[in-house]
Image 1 (cartoon, rainbow, N blue to C red):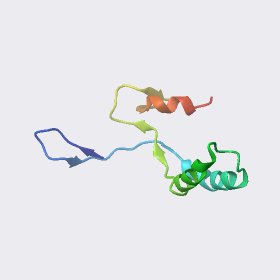
Image 2 (image 1 turned 180 degrees about the horizontal axis):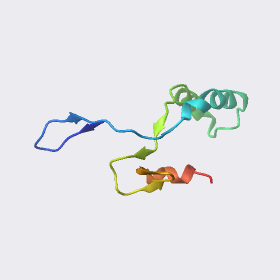
Image 3 (image 1 turned 90 degrees about the horizontal axis):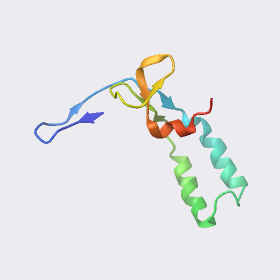
Image 4 (image 1 turned 60 degrees about the horizontal axis):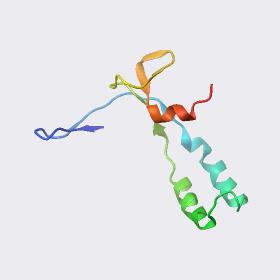
Length: 90
């Protein structure tokens, strides 16, 4: 991670995070799009979504250096990005 301010040079930082393992669903998503031509509407967006799915990477969902956010259960050192809480099903 890079950090900078107007008066200083960027410096590389490192932190531990939790990730959503989106790549786990990559093959399923690609096959589902190909096997269900009516899944994406408008249809001309299907190729865009296939390209997107081919390049899926796991995404971080927590931060250790933020004080605002949703506390990660059983890990007080991490908070969940506020936007990600919409995907959590308990």
